[in-house]
Image 1 (cartoon, protein in one colour):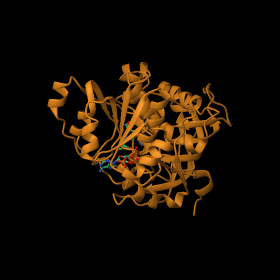
Image 2 (image 1 turned 90 degrees about the vertical axis):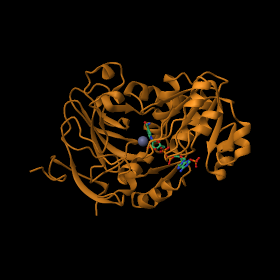
Image 3 (image 1 turned 135 degrees about the vertical axis):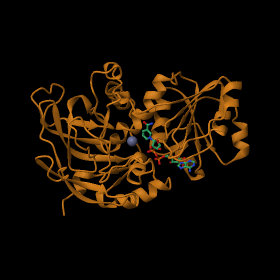
Image 4 (image 1 turned 90 degrees about the horizontal axis):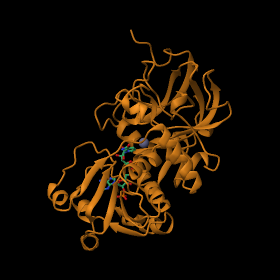
Length: 360
Ligand code: NAP
Ligand code: ZN
């Protein structure tokens, strides 16, 4: 018989978990493995709240495996390092993102693309390389193979830097891979949430002109005056959408719900590229005519490899890019999830784990 989460490993652990698709999170006792020779044990300070956490606790994709302890935007302190660990010392400030394991020998892993390894394990709701279930960052600590631990640059604050570990790399990687970084080109960012607002900042750091395409008119002022976007389009305003047809070189689409691609494809110039990053629970319709008639391209992208994630953190430290956050206590998480579902967050919730998580 399978061991209980509380007894399968030697070290007691505590966090908050969802037990079913209601998504309600509540205190949860489980356990963590001993720190192995290649492992780093991380005391968690902060953890961002990604929309993927919400999709997973609600079982939007049909593969949630309860109990789920979400959280994959983790910043903390290394409290133990194994004897083979060369990159980290006890006391270092470190990051852990979406990936905590991969085969480390396939074509993807050999190209620093662990994010496309067929055996990649996610930080939560996954089976780890030791064959046991993974639990994420809404918890006091985590044990991770050194390959999947990041050096957290000195200049980055732990709380507002945490969201870069998923939101940051998820927008940075496709911009690099698809060649969406040429200064002066025009980037559209669809959906101004966690991923979207970081895309605006990274786009500006690359020297792009950035237009936000949003379903929330109330975000216009902040998009321009706080986040640095050049312009703002409300997707439900047919006149403004029409006037913007054929003006954009690239679009990063971060919308988390089912939505029409047709209006977005219309905004692209000939040869324009749209990268979809959002993961709605149902397929999107792909209109072929605008692709064919304008030699346009639609692609996707999944987070990023470890080397590129480190590069992105260093880039953000250099350009003073952090997330705009609302810091919450652990016991405020259920309200935060309700607000996230309504796109009512400016622009990422981050849990103050170390100061608000205590076993009952
Ligand atoms: P988020 O903070 O909730 O932002 C999503 C934004 O999409 C919202 O703020 C909203 O922006 C827009 N939106 C939501 N519902 C909409 C609707 N019905 N119609 C039109 N627009 C809507 O979420 P996030 O954390 O940025 O994540 C976004 C998506 O990316 C999620 O599906 C998540 O699972 C996925 N994701 C993918 C990867 C990857 O590697 N590819 C990594 C992380 C997350 P406006 O108010 O501006 O319209
Ligand atoms: Zn995420």
